[in-house]
Image (cartoon, rainbow, N blue to C red; front, side, top):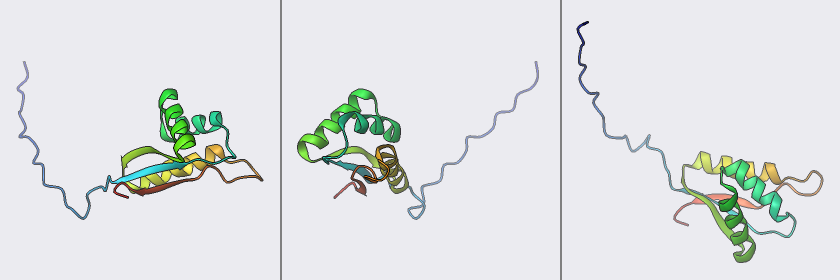
Length: 108
């Protein structure tokens, strides 16, 4: 049997507050009268990775309440990417640039 060497556990340093990821962002979807329900559900699945059931609930909440949180606890870049994806998957050339959504601080 070959000799095995046990390595010491790596040291975990405390996170540097300047480089810590800010996971305090959310994506909010707003209702509109342009995009149909199925298109919005599909976009929520593609852009945010939601299941069909969750995407339907988010789309219904946006439709009935005027807005809905798509995802929260994100860093700013991820929130911006999801919102851009929602616009991409719902864009209608010559008619609309996509659904209304925004990436905002989670505490707003």
